[in-house]
Amino acid sequence: MIPKMNVYKERWGIDSDNSIKPGLDAVREALSKMGNLERELQVIHVAGTNGKGSTIAFMEAILKEHGFSTGVFSSPAIIDIHDQIRMNGDEITEEELDKSFRAMKEAGLSGLLTDFELLTVAAFLTFGRLAPDYVLLETGMGGLLDSTNVVVPLVSVITSIALDHTAFLGGTIAEVAEQKAGIIKKGIPVVIGPLPEEALKVVHAISSRQVSPLFMYGEQFGMKNNMFNGTSTFLLTERKMKGPHQGVNAAVAIQSLLVAGIQLTEEAASKGVATTQLAHRFQEISPGVFMDGAHNPAAAKVLADTIRFEFPGEKVDFVVGMLKGKDIENTLNELIPVAASFTFLTFPHPQAATGEQLMEHCHHQRKRVTIAGSDTIILVTEENRKLIVTGSLYLLGGLMD
Image (cartoon, rainbow, N blue to C red; front, top):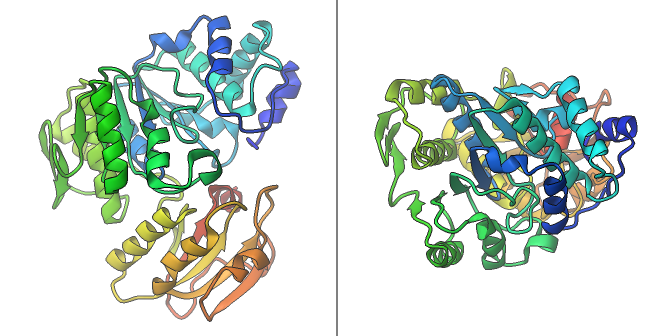
């Protein structure tokens, strides 16, 4: 479900399927009808289980500081369809999205695509028309069969690999890695964050087969004490995005831009990293209250590590809402060591797990259930403890709407 997409489908009389159908044939046919505008774009393609959004946000800010214009396609929506397509940091306007939907209707795309495929085509059309210097393209799910995987990018980026969307991507790290590494194109360089050994073997094999130069975090580049060392060396003065993992994401972003052939200066790169803030990535929304979209075990481990790093020795209160089909129990298990209590939310989304379902998977002694938006959820701290609202980005976006 893509919020407010039906507004445009109904306005322009375009049908599309609200389901997930991995594969590229349909989107390739649709883009051919549209004149293959995606081939004219300077694209950096980003896959990964976690860290995609943050890495793209760092690249977006760094490019802005260097005077470049940017287009970003990301998912899922934080509020609605408009924030999935951004130009120079601003969500796409209704006027621009109307132009793209009108063009798709006139080209006869109605009935050919899924919702996400249709939105992917709309993004390419929008960027083809507005002509940003660089397009930062995030995969929707996986990589190999994701509808964004029709581009030949300047560089392919894989931020992380862990188990997620196992029904579609496979039940082992190696199987997920095969899907994520599907964005690697022949001869196109690859930049990767820290990966599990099992995933690294797969990425190594695929990049070798594709004769694609491989740049690995911790080998060809890295970040230590705010010093980036890679194709260039930069001292980064500060970073608003908290947690050691965001230092890794910043390093992946900088190395990816350098590998793409973009000339960076230390001053502009440092300012870009210092000013980057992505909604719901350990974002402090009021004193002592944070939002973080940790919706799988790997992201929850990163969140717990960030809490330990930022608030040594402290326990925090969690407010949690998640979608069905996620690895709820193992996600919660990662948070328990830093938890003082859990409050589970039932929130309005067709795929949302109920608070009661979530609580069944929680092995912490202090736990309760409430309903998002009711008077029982008060986003303030108790007993001077920090409060972390986490889980689905759909939950976080709804609470901030």
